[in-house]
Every structure is written in C-alpha cells, then in structure tokens.
Length: 341
Image (cartoon, rainbow, N blue to C red):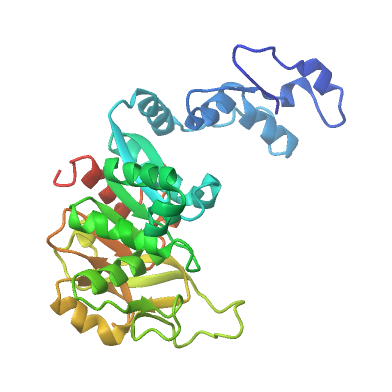
C-alpha cells in the first residue's frame, strides 16, 4: 500500500506487482489527503474492498458485491475540511512531549469538536512548567505554560500515575475553577480536582492523595481497599463498570440523555475517600455519579460552574467518529459557548 505526496512522484505499481502474492489490482496508492477521514473514501474509490474479497476467497462469481455505505463518512470528512472556528483546549499533563501518550483523548476531542463544527486546537502544557519552582528554574517555560493555560477556552487534565507534575495539575484545576473555565478531569484529573477543592475551598491545607503522600494527614484520595500495595500487576480496577447518576438534572446526566446509569471503562488503583464525601458535599462539591454500592465516587461536578466535571472512569475509550463521548462533547460545547444549546 504505497504512500506518496499528491504532488510527488507516484510509486510504480508495476514494479511492486512482481512481488510474490501481489498484482496490480491488489496495490492501492494512498496519497496525502486533507484529513485522515478521507482515507476510507480513497480506498473505496480504488476498489480496495473488492481486492480484499478476492484475496480472501469471498468473491462470489456472478454477483456484484454490495457497495460500502459511506455517505455519513463522506459528510463527516467534508465537514472536517470546512471547519474554521477554533476551540482551544489546554492539555495539562506530564507526557506532553509525546502526543501519542494521549492518543485516545486526542481522538475523543476531535470527534466532539467536529460534531460541533469547531476546529480543534490542542495546546500542550507540561504540568511541571506550571509549578512555582519552574518560575525560578525555567522562567521561559513557566511563562509559556501559563500563557497557554490562560489563553485556552477549556482545560483537560488526563489520567496518569506518580507525583511528578502533580502540583502543576492542581494549579491548572484551580485556575479553571476560579475563572469559570470549562474543565474536564479524567481519572487522576478528577482526583486532582478533589485535592485542589479540599485545599483551596475547604482550607484543608494538608489534603492529599496517599499515592503521593502515604502518611497524608487528610487523605482525600486513598488506595482502594481491595487492591494490593505489594503486587502492582493485575491489581487495578479495570474494564466496563456501571455508574449510577445521583442527581437527575446535573450536566453530566443531561449529556448522557438523562440516563439513569452509564457503562464506562475504568483503569485505576486510587479513589476518592468515601469517608470524606459528606464534608465535600457540604462545601459545595457534588458527587453526581457513584457505583452500585454508592460508596465509590465516579463523577464530580461543581453546580455553580459553567462546566467543571471530573470522572474516575475514562470516557475517551468509548468515543467514536460520529458518536462522540458525551462528556467530551460537553467540554467542547462549554468551551465554544454551545453548552446551553
């Protein structure tokens, strides 16, 4: 399957056709296209589906194979090309130098932005560069990171492990909360938002996760009781789990079409301390989604905020082109002034 620039020299298909098991009809050229969603259309136009049927012995002589139904895909690819109005999302993490580390999240953001006719712009913000120490050690990086964060229409803090850059993520959550900037925290990003709320709003200055400080005096995020602290393999809470909405008119439930529950995929060892939930709710933080037991917190919201949502699960894993994740749709909608619509 040769690749080349549309303006460059084409590959000689006849040369490739002499290779074993090859033939001119089995060679497809993929030249550069305006967006990746044109690739299936390019394959269709070169009858790649017919070549596959023949190679696999599925071609029925005398019968015309059904044409691929790509009308929705064609519309989607065309819409992508016409996007002009940008929406800027600050991605605050510690692996920002390798965008593939957050590939599922990038795709989920793209699915949502195209659905809302917005051109996605992702600003990569290394969380370490937001920390106070960076102002002294790497002042240029510090200024750049804060400039990107303050210039974003929305903020996303993805999942992760370890304590490097955590303080920067906390500062990003604080910036979004205090300035009414749309925020979506996923897994660790939700836990970060809880820690920040405890420290800044509830004045629990020593609030922390036992992942970062095992001896935390105010452990608002704790290791799950069923996990093992000595064997790290196969000890995570994984797979699709059911989350039940506790508040029917919250933003998250509305985005899920007022469903009573949702099934989303998980990947974590730590959770919000259930013994502190009542304190948080008295202080204004709402736990709108919980597991079937009612003790494991799955979704948080700030009711008075434009869009401040955290999830223990990973909604990006269920996002698809043409069927974006509801919570990513909410983030993009809030970031582009479309949430009420």
